[in-house]
Image (cartoon, rainbow, N blue to C red; front, side, top):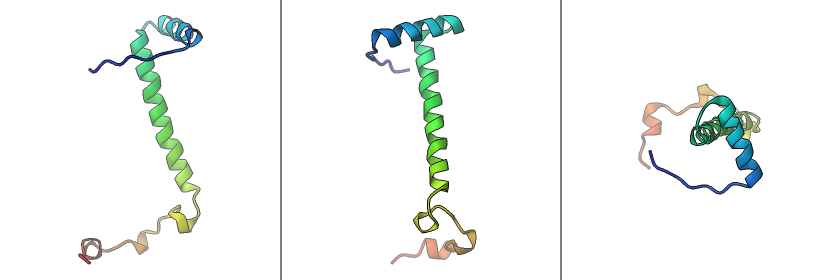
Amino acid sequence: MPKSIITLDPKVLLWARRRAADEGISLSRLIGRLLEEEGADACWRAYEEWKRLPDDLGGRVDASQRFTRDEAHERR
């Protein structure tokens, strides 16, 4: 796995070290897990935001108005 170097505020680093120790995992594993969770949360937030878009901006998808296979692959 590739290694990375990050810079943290000393207070944040202290918090992260304590939390990792409380959970019995390495600081690296804690940071990796937090970043993975944030990525998953961001994906769901984007999906929820997309669902709130007005219909004319792609917020609703009407399956009856989809292209047929031939229309989708038609060369223009």
